[in-house]
Length: 174
Image (cartoon, rainbow, N blue to C red):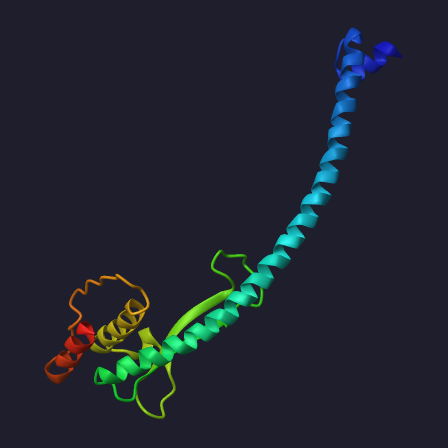
């Protein structure tokens, strides 16, 4: 039986005890791994819950900030010869968490440029000149919230001229 057992485990008969000790250690490590796996699953569930709570708080704070920022940007846009411009920031919260570092919200900038018309994403509505002015309005508003900020504009006056160019200059000066 001793030799049959050695043959079965593909070791020499004198190595059977060492092999037994090795198998015993592997079994104990496997049991420890199972316990560790259970502990890790518990920790993962706790961290996922913490993420969801934090993401929901972040989403609420973003919504408040988005509303304030959108009103300020709309005011700036109206000063840039877009009298009916209404800028909105839409937060789309994902129903299934993807556990991204930035939370569960997708942010969309939307604009309505004509009265009574529904707003849409900037890419679908705004012309080149409007995009330049909207970009300026956004950057001017954000710069006011950051002390010591310097902004370099490249061709901010693309697609505009005349009185609108003067308004752009005034806003840039501000």
